[in-house]
Length: 100
Image (cartoon, rainbow, N blue to C red; front, side):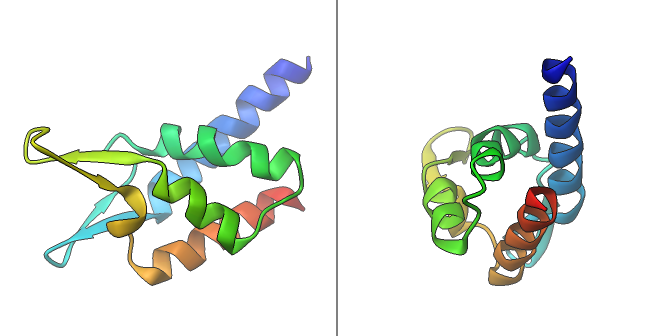
């Protein structure tokens, strides 16, 4: 039963991240759900929630470790480099909400 609850929580977290967090490219907002990045981000950040260790520095470290291919895979950037500061703040807020 715990696995079902974990799966449901992870899916809900991914959905909320996908709908509210976006990457900014030339003032275009590409939401993480549309970029197919919301599940990866949720899976990487979920342990912070379960360990009750959500804080801005840890979130940034994880975002730095998530590669995003651009230009048809010719280049790769860290997700943190594509997120506006406000989205980083919103992401931490979402994670803190799930941690409570």
